[in-house]
Length: 382
Image (cartoon, rainbow, N blue to C red; front, side):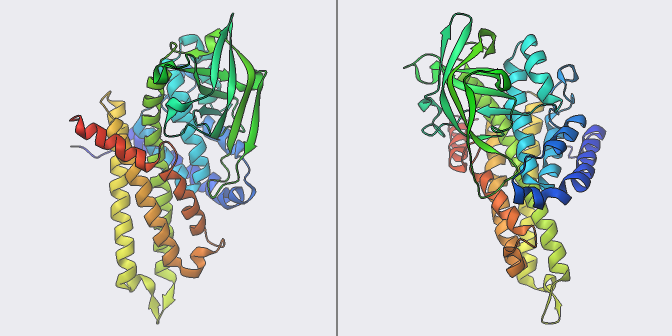
């Protein structure tokens, strides 16, 4: 069993770490305050191949592996969870399904601009009545000659307000349940009948837009269909498995920031004539944080390694996402406690970490759903 990173993976992590420290971290608090999409940062990340890390160079990506992706995403999210969310969706939820299920022509047209960071991609699945239950989708796509006509509203779509391209799930055969769902890859900037609806005001990840996407007789070409009709649900499950690795990495990154800032504060804050780091109560909190975050990172890297090697990773991805997000939420709460009153004030980034951490337990499948996925795999003997 070898826990050493390859030379390339180590280089990717160090590159992401330097970029995050110099280009992102100094701006993170302001971006959280203004809710402004970090367009310039995303373009620079594209130049560094971080917006399509595992996409082959032929299609504008970095041509690297998913372990490298997870390592880079940890470092980016450590500096700014909002930027990490944008990067995660771009890689896991947009680039992956287009790469996995698209034709060569679709990849050239729809993958290159997003994997290279020129444009932002999104994944539109969730609706007001269809979250954990995708069979309840109401968005429809009806064939009309050489076009598909799409009608419906998507909800809580990360990057939906800034995305130029999107993978959209819609019902193409009513009454067929899961088997009636198909996926489409769409040029949103050139689709009549599409508009951005409400952009949500959120608890955290404020520089990452979360929007409604509205389709009213939106017409897209016949070749927008991704794969075959009725394959959308299967594509969705595999896409979300990879996406959960991304959210696990994002959570680990937030947790790492919490631990570092807790350690720094505990060493310098004095009470009763000595640093609070000398008190056993604080030491135990730090020890628990460090141990659980190491475990979460190992689970995340294991899931990414399994994906890279073509092995089943559904259960591993669900475990990584569930555990990493739970661990990071606990760490953030304890981080605020260690800083005391300062932890509750915006003078320090700790309160932002706690707000950002919470969403990791919710999106890409709630942690309740992750437990069902894990249990289902166990009961099947996987």
